[in-house]
Length: 89
Image (cartoon, rainbow, N blue to C red; front, side):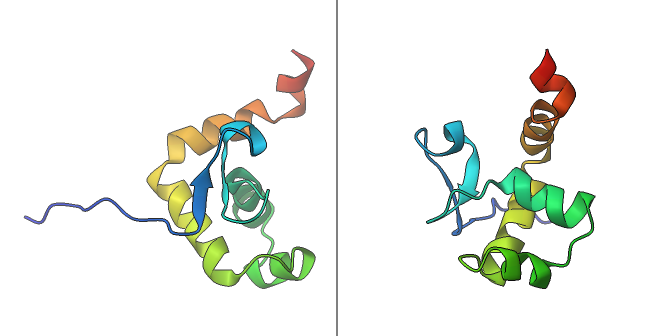
C-alpha cells in the first residue's frame, strides 16, 4: 500500500487581498473556480480559454484543475456561493 503525497500547486496562490482570499492563478486575478466553471461546467477547451485570457498558460490552467480535484469541497462551495440565487439571498 502506498501513501498519497500532498500535491504542490506552483501556479495557485491564496492571498487575502486578491479575490477575497479565494485560490487564484499566481500573478493574475483569475480564480480557480472560474477555470472550473469555464472548462468543466461549460465545456470550454483550455486552449480556447487561454485565447480569451492570454495572461494564462496551459500549465496554470491544468494546475488549477488539479487544485480543484485536490480541494473539491472548498471550490464547489465557492462555486455555489457565486450563483445568482446566492447573490440574491
